[in-house]
Image 1 (spheres, helix red, strand yellow):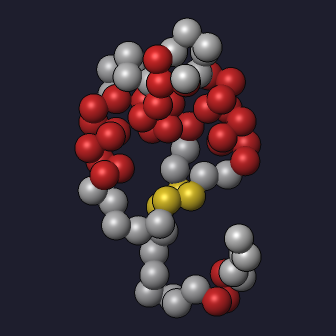
Image 2 (tube, one colour; image 1 turned 180 degrees about the vertical axis):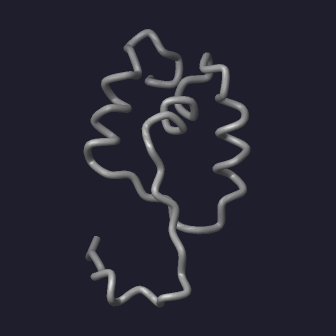
Length: 70
């Protein structure tokens, strides 16, 4: 997949930068905010991005016993 430079993106196009918490809640059905995060993310129309450090932290926080980590 080719990456586009930020200058290639129209100025009026917004994006969502997601942090660790919502991703952990999304992928762990036992998390108390799972349903809320799932519903919120389903309603987002903009592209959703996460950084490599955020993804690393998410993978670390999701234990092998988590249903969502399978």
